[in-house]
Image (cartoon, rainbow, N blue to C red; front, top):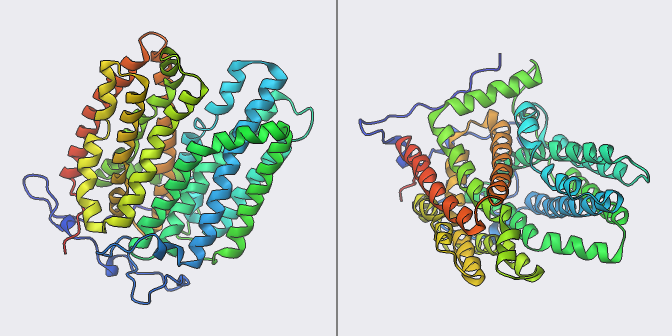
Length: 454
């Protein structure tokens, strides 16, 4: 049996409001481990509790941390490497088979294995040193992509290798997210997580376009070589640019049992479960736009350019929203806007019920993206609530659920669009999503909204 997760008790009144959550936890509740090397955060008196500062410090303070610069550069390489691998492998499979179904399966395998590995292997993130896990994930990914390059590799083997790369991904992202709390102090952690998301959203905007341009100049196998180089570069940056830190949890039992038990304990805790649902539910409805993008743009008689802009509209709004919130607002202000922004984030999609023209539809998706700044407040609440010894497993579970439900939303949107007009799918999704998010936000409030006071 996995050890019980020690969660801090809270005092609730008759209305379900948590009084202790009105003030963020102090450093004494999350003391730094004596065996953890300090990271040069640029300020000797910076708080050690992630997200515990009260004033805006800006993204420059995050890049002042040498370890974060290495981790950020590694993330840029790995995220674009993943995109290039998807584009190149899809082109390779289509060139060899001419099958649209098998080509679509390459994209589907980006998300589907997340739930399996994210739940069953999450214990690795805390049981072994973070740097070793991150470097190993990059090396294994590079090896899998390298095997794809071998001429004559059967299609089934290519898809299996793609699945393995996808199964590695949630472990890598969960371990990296947990490691950021060791590297970045105070509000730097929140802004560091924001920068990671900004890169991921930017990859959606330009990554597939850049990957397509690569295929103009080189064959799919040559593009896969570029992917191997990006994963190898990421591994080198993490190995030599970050410090060794011991494992958070010295478990000795069965890994899968430990991972499943920890996931169950995290989901059984009302506050953590509510925060996880707040992370998972809105993006599940956001991805409806990707699932119906092709038929919606086709009905508008727009070409490839319109399709690309439609897909880029929401990520563009997300990037702008996070940059503005991280630059202009302090932690307390970001806490205050988190729930209102999440509550209205899907309302622009509900307006698709009126069958707007394509330019208006793009503007509506951009508006939904502008609500994404609620994630900065969410980051602070989540890292404060989750005990340090299970932080890696919690972050892996968060990422696995997020990617899995995004895949579900995308797939369901595409299936429903075969029976009803795509604008109705988006409008109905916006309405249903808003009602669902409001129910989730009610549980977030009832378990105590962690808002810092001056």
